[in-house]
Length: 120
Image (cartoon, rainbow, N blue to C red; front, top):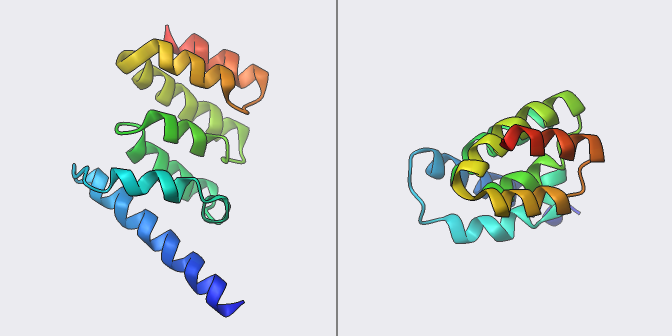
């Protein structure tokens, strides 16, 4: 148990370091981001404020991964606020990809509609 928990702490710290590196404009760690954000145990260990910080950094580099993180934000108000910000940025990059990803996401229907309206 202690080994597994230690491993979780290491993975959380690695994700925080990658986010800090991305925030400084370094993109060399982007390939590692996929694996860490695919680790449900790591993602579930973050609270809403920590997820918000990750989303605000990652949205510029990988909006698809930021949307994935958004589905883990527990507070609907925060999810909607962050989602509107993400949709506005992503629609400028690739509106078709944003539309498909939001449609396929596990967000509640009302939130998906709100994000689509934020894209236009």
